[in-house]
Length: 82
Image 1 (spheres, rainbow, N blue to C red):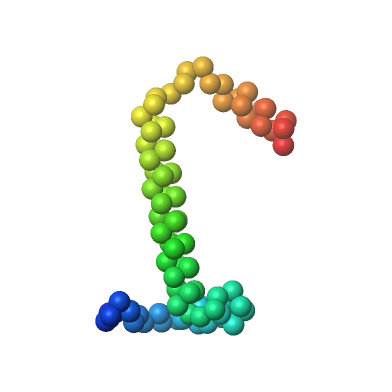
Image 2: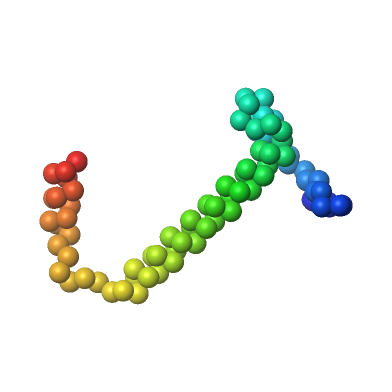
């Protein structure tokens, strides 16, 4: 449960706190707050990527099937280049 006063928040991180403290001890972050903010930024970026991929998938499905595309030739070409 989060509480807030004067723009500050207090949250219970549970076992996640240990991960944050380890990252601080390794020097990846200056303090636990920085580690938490980085995690929240990463989560927001991941959500934007997932949303964009979903949009692209929907656009692709709506565009229909290209009857001229040769799947077998594509796979053969991909294997030859690998």
